Image 1: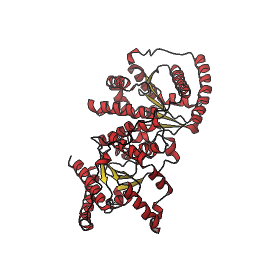
Image 2: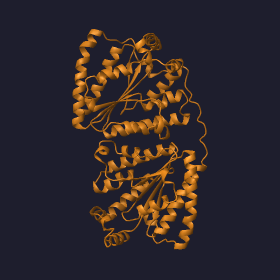
Image 3: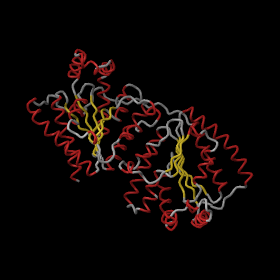
Image 4: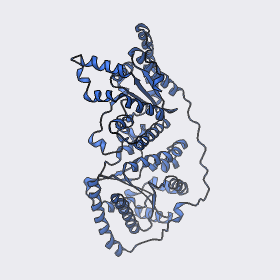
Length: 489
């Protein structure tokens, strides 16, 4: 692909000035329209050292309102970032709706510098390609515009520019030993770039290779490409409504297999739970020592006992090593980002435990049933959730998912108890009663959720919850088994 690029193209100075003046006005207007329509944009600037990435970024941002964009320079991950999956740090930097994020280098470091300098195996960088394609597709599906530029210069031109910089006392610091080492490996990087362009140039997020020997030509080509992409995004029609999901009135559900008569005597519970809690504490310390992250996720019917279950699970744990993440309706910045954004922000670093009291499954449960998500959004979410969990598990995260199941009769009894007990009344709301009236719709949503997102790498465990004591013992044992199994590996 790179060998087809004509590096000798150029533009006269006067023609460049006039063209950029027109493009500047156009880009300023387009930025305001994107903001008004709430369309987020991501511009990725990759290229050879000394190809002019910084100058190019400065030039195309010049006509834009600086309140509407942010530039991120990607360097080696910090200690905090290194304790998370590779894409974690980039999820933190995604733009909100209507804003622009510019990346001076980006997630492509994994298939360029990591591949060449760290001699990553073929399997590792092939996996990175898939991770990148998934990430970008999720963002585009959510409405984002992604522009990716590779600024291309020859090895000879790069050497010439390095020499010019080194001859300038004010700029010589810009040429580092790492730059010189990469220059010697130009041919190795060339092949890595070729592979990257082929593997990750997609219909929704294509690469644009910019001949960068002539800076004027490069600046015009970049500005024209950005303007055209912005105009295309503004002109795209609204998606057609998705057809309603066809669900049988009474389906055979994974929930049907749950035996809600299961129970445990109080005496046996009191005898068993302390030893399980002690074992949990020991495993927490082992997780930290081996730097294994863990996520324990609770979903379930209202009043199914999630809060009490979590309280017992964490009773003997060191609070410095875990965090309970209560999930409510999205608010503030959460509402103007991809719905997975807030969950990426909350995943634990290596060696720590995150316990989610409700989770990303709200997209296919309450948001589906109550109409807060469009049919396109919640139907797309099954795939996105599986991809999200696959990435967590591939990184080494222990992921345990519970659905605490109770009967409608047991739920009604607990609702009435809460309503009639003064110190428990805060636990019951009008929304709980409204949700109960939609038991059938939620049953269908839960059933489909389990069927489509119980995978070999992240299976669901259905907890029979009519007896709270039994449910607590079962969740403890399931978590202990999952953690122990991972630690043995």
